[in-house]
Amino acid sequence: MTDEEIIDLFWSRNQTAITQTARQYGNYCYAIANGILNNREDSEECLNDTWHRAWEAIPPQRPNKLSLFLGKITRHLAFDKYKMNRAKKRGGSEFTLVLNELDECIPSPNTVEQTIEAEELELTINQFLHSLPERKCSIFLLRYWHNKPLSEIASRFGMKENNVKASLFRTRQKLKAHLEKEDVTL
Amino acid sequence: MKNEMLYAAIGAADDGLLNRCESRVKDNPRPIRRRHWAWVLPTAACLALVVAVTAIFGNNLGWFGSTIYTAELDGGTLSFYKSSTPDAACYAYAEGEDVSMRSLTQEEREMLYFDAFGDLDFYAEGAFALGDRWGLDTTLIHVTAGSGSDGSDQGYDDVSTKIIMSQDGNSIAEMQATKQFQHMASVINGVQVSAGYFITHENSRGERSVIYMASYEVNGNNVYIECGGSLERSDEIRAEIARITETLTLNSGLNLMSIVY
Image (cartoon, rainbow over all chains, first blue to last red):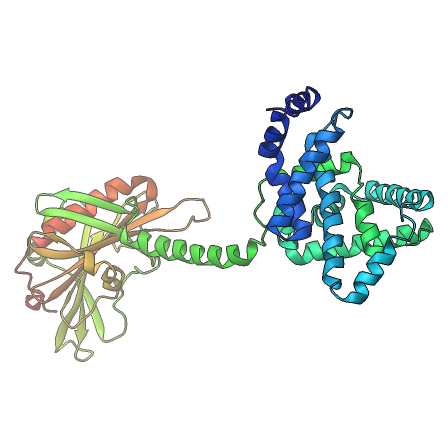
């Protein structure tokens, strides 16, 4: 089934859309989620959330490329879950509970100012990625977007693992210089 | 967390970039490119060695077919193998003041079956070791025969024939050239004959010669036969040495002791 046909199912509110999406992009999205969470149950939960988010977003959206659309949702959800899991690990004591309870009193971090800063950071990083040669850019994204192991990246590019490591190191250094030049502070 | 902010921001990479990268994710993994020379060189060296050894030995042993010539005779098939020592054959000389030479008599030529080569301008001489200057004690060293007056003034276009016979104990230097073919000897008239040939390098006129040789031992005597000439006449020369060899091997009672100074 083509992306267009699946999107049409979403638009006609046909629940087969989710079955077809899971069949076609289940493995792809699972790889993204598990790359971040490294946990089967969490990753599968993340996938279900992805299909649910897609169901809510389409319509009104009509993605040009369904895989990228779903991949971005999965990555975002998996990353949120990762942060939540990490907070849980740190927790457990009464003191942590107290702090978490106090969190509710703090205004939401997604203030307008912070959102603008995040968008500026995204824009700066996109500029940087566009300035990279195709090969270096893809290596960088495979590592920091798809969370692929060095060995797998090496295999896909026909390189030695050490060369991939060196390429990533140089790109990170360039990114640092780029962010400094753009006066971006994290 | 700063790294988390960065990670989240990378998540918003343009679709175009991700699309390009995604093709890498979906592609089948490519094999890792290795430095092939690391194993290619030793392998190539080994292969070259095997080829060289095979070429040298195979050529000498006639594995490739084209280096063996044969002559079909009534007394058997005489095979000629290509020699690895193209300078092996040489003329034999009996030199020194204690050596004397004379032409063989007609009777002696008949005894050695040389009369069969009446169609050739055939010379035959015996070299004798003299016990003293006055020839009171003589021993036959060898008999040299061939076409032409002395076997050395052949024109290039002529076919040169040479026969050397020696009693056992008086070795014939030229026979060394045919020793390499001993294990592939042909049987002609019941006699084991080692035969081979070699082709010379081009001379100043760009011409090449072929030398065929055959040797055998019979009745306690060594016999060496050699025919040479222009490479273009190779078939004719080979037929000539085959004819001479077949004739001489019929002489199973060869007795050089009867020839005295």
